[in-house]
Amino acid sequence: MVRHRRSLTAALLLVLTVATTAPSQPRVEIVAGGLEVPWALAFAPDGRLFVTERPGRIRLVKNGRLEAEPIATLPVAAAGEGGLMGLALDPAFAETGHLYTCYTAAKGRRLVNRVVRLTLRGGSAGGERVLLDDIPGAGIHDGCRVKFGPDGRLYVTTGDAAEPRLAQRRDSLAGKILRVNPDGTVPEDNPFPGSPVFSLGHRNPQGLAWDPSGRLFAAEHGPSGHDEINHILAGRNYGWPEVRGQGGDTRYVEPLLESTQDTWAPSGIAFLGGDLFVAGLRGQRLLRVSLAPDLSRVVRVATLLSGTHGRLRDVVVGPDGVLYVTTSNRDGRGWPRPDDDRIVRVRLEGQ
Image (cartoon, rainbow, N blue to C red; front, side):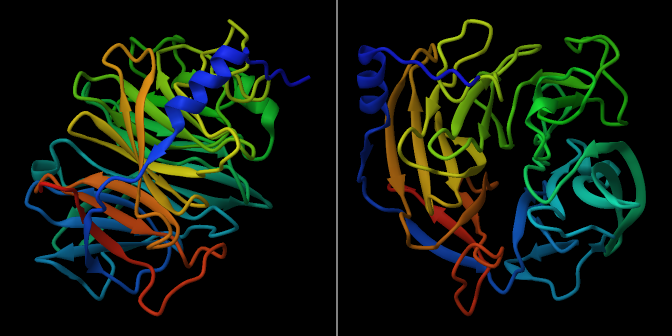
């Protein structure tokens, strides 16, 4: 039985904290267009911008221009929400040339998600090495965001692969946030010895980001009206499918923010200037979330780009200190324009 209780006081507080404002809208510049469902962005130290396309290509934006040929094409199963998704560059990328990605693959008659490492040599990336395999996959709820944390470990989100009970099973990699070493081995200080599982009880997390003090946050697709922003702690349980949103059950960590009557469908997230920016797919907006320093409450939520660019998939901070955002209008759920999908540069007021 799903529990979802909230006192009147808590409900009023939540309504107040998620009330949106209409700040001065940012200036938007197109970086690249004509992409096919771009999923993740990653900047190299020299300013090159790498982007994944869900059908299986890794593309490169160099000197402000999208190169015509991909640097890699991977044998993905682009079924439903699956395909080529997350992307991260080795913290020592300038020396190693290592790129890490997560994609859906077919194994016989079933789908799995796989985390691999590629090495960039010249103008192409190859030498695929599988780090994690057989993560349950499906046409929905695949997770697959990959990011390096400030601790040098690789973090990977996984969805419940349309089997909600897997999110509560410690012996399943579905519905989790995973943490591994760059070579795919399990860190000795993981919360569950010998396991890559860092946290559990997730439905479909697609956003990872660390605040300036090193605290980890995740954005998670919930059932309609219960999308979540969570502060992620090692070994903790975030409740899915036992609770949705703020369930009032002390066994599970409560979200810092949930969407209630609205649906954001949050994907990529990024911190800039202490605020958390959240790319919304169904919500077709960029949220700017300000948190109290002790994370006890949300101070303010502002809405940017509401409906102006359609579905938004990823957001990262570039080396110029400006936000870069991808659209996702060619994913079968949007209304693409002739130049979709795009990468856009979003300059906030004062930048």
